[in-house]
Image 1 (cartoon, one colour):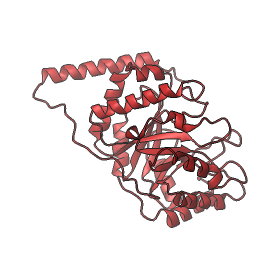
Image 2: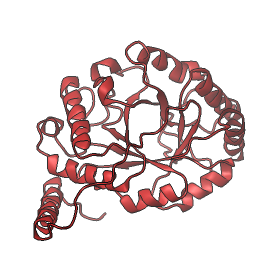
Image 3: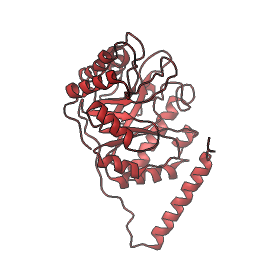
Length: 318
């Protein structure tokens, strides 16, 4: 395992970089440091988004393999970035060239959520926001996903909901101050279940959220869309009318997989969701962490092909 730099070290490097940029602007006043004017939030088109998360290095080959298997090009590709990780503009540009919008979950790993809310990390956030604005195409960004569950350091039982809300609002405010109007803000919760906190306590307010993301998987033999997502969607609709994306989901390789995948796609349309992001990962760590991949799984691939053909006829474009 390679040694990891501490957050303090990384932030020191970032701050030094910011200082060099500021110095360069002062030395060359004729050069404009303004961003292109971009107003490129994604359209809230129902049943029009097919996304995928592929683990490993940022490359297109695994995405292309997924597209070939399901006979449909994803228009969202998800990635997860730890705190102090910069925006990968080169990767985002590559995705854009293939008609794909990057979906980035910025998670406050090894960082204080209260410090984020208090402005301690503003230099990092401004640098990130500037890179997103310079990219100039739509980007979906989330912060601290699944915060209403207890398994992450920024989540329930670790950070008060009010502190998280303050941090979320602060992050969005910084991006807006930097002119990153091309961001679709995805507030991502874990679907209701045992031990999951009521999501409304973590709600930042409609003015700070574009879409609601809901994460969950078909893990039990009797799972249906209504039991996995339906109750949570109905609950979310009691406090916001923001559109819903199934932001992380899959169906395990068990008997009835084809039927369940078709049920997932059908439920997406019946409950008026924007689309879904397939979590194409081999976890193999118990019932809740199965092998979700479609590679070498013709049943899953065929089911998703049918789902795309029947329920995602007009994919949205960036």
